[in-house]
Amino acid sequence: MINPKNLPIPSIQRLPRYLRLLEEAKARGERVVSCTRIADDLGQLSVQVRKDLAITGVTGRPKVGYRVDELIDAIRNFLGWNQKTNAFLVGVGNLGSAILNYAGFVTHGLNVVGVFDVNPRLRGKEVNGHKIIPFGEMLDYVKMLNGYGIVVQMGVITVPASAAQDVADKLVQCGVRGIWNYAPTVLELPENVVCENVKLSESFAVLTNRMRNQDL
Amino acid sequence: MINPKNLPIPSIQRLPRYLRLLEEAKARGERVVSCTRIADDLGQLSVQVRKDLAITGVTGRPKVGYRVDELIDAIRNFLGWNQKTNAFLVGVGNLGSAILNYAGFVTHGLNVVGVFDVNPRLRGKEVNGHKIIPFGEMLDYVKMLNGYGIVVQMGVITVPASAAQDVADKLVQCGVRGIWNYAPTVLELPENVVCENVKLSESFAVLTNRMRNQDL
Image (cartoon, rainbow over all chains, first blue to last red; front, top):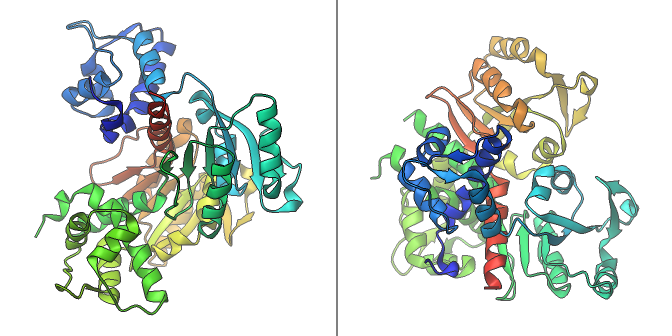
């Protein structure tokens, strides 16, 4: 068994695509799927698929394959997607709105319990059913939630880079244990708060570099 | 010298953060920056920084460091960010609008020359100065551009997964050599078209898995 603190990040990153493929197979009524089929459909090596899936604790049966239901459960459990993750989202620009409107994250357990923006004119405006709360009222709001036994576990930051550290500090005060940071900046956080930076520029860099190398 | 087709992707992915740090140093009037400083500021090992930066062809001078201007140029050239990349963007929802409004991609060379949406009611509406063109008119539009000597090199796909393959096929017909795909689906593309998938779910998976492991 691998120490959960030392799991290979690339394997974890590939789990959502296996999950998507398995859910499609389930929707078609398939109950078993082989490692080779998964590998072929995704254009990967089957030895890698087997290794990736093993981190969830499930192994396929030789010449049969994986039981679809069991593997879906195992992946969702491994990722923490079979339980709700209560989250605050800060910054309701286009990017914040895109996240609030994307149904996919809800099926991954993202449960937004507060949406904030620094612009006071947005107060009360709704985005996909979430009423926008002024950023300055976050601490009062979280106290109210805590009074009802609701704990906020995650903060989603979709503000400009210049505002991101302030927002992160406030989210830490609210007790979040994880931050999903879309702002292009490195955040300073306490050791017990994990952070995942979404780096759209990094993805763009890989693409433009590969396009440039086509010409070489 | 490393074969440009066999470059380590993680090193390429880290280049934008070095570039950001160097541009900040330049703005402060610094002309030389040491590898150790870069490593400390980004929380990385200096041996990794040195190795990453070497792929651009620039090496620092012992006990002095990197010349900021030279290294900025080298990274931008290596990523193809010192020249414009003409692009079509398809799908003007929140995500597409976020990309069109984010100034950072312009400094990376992203030069959007056409914005499309399948919704005919959006015709002529402007997003950050770009007039929306009906998706059905893309081929006529690219012929017009080509007549003026303008070639479209990249397609940015910000439509739902179900529409992404159709959009990709049309972009390939327009002659793009690279696709930046935000739709959560695997695209089938000719071999000479490179594709970079932005996988927000993968980033979310790493975060929720790490948060789950905090409890173990």
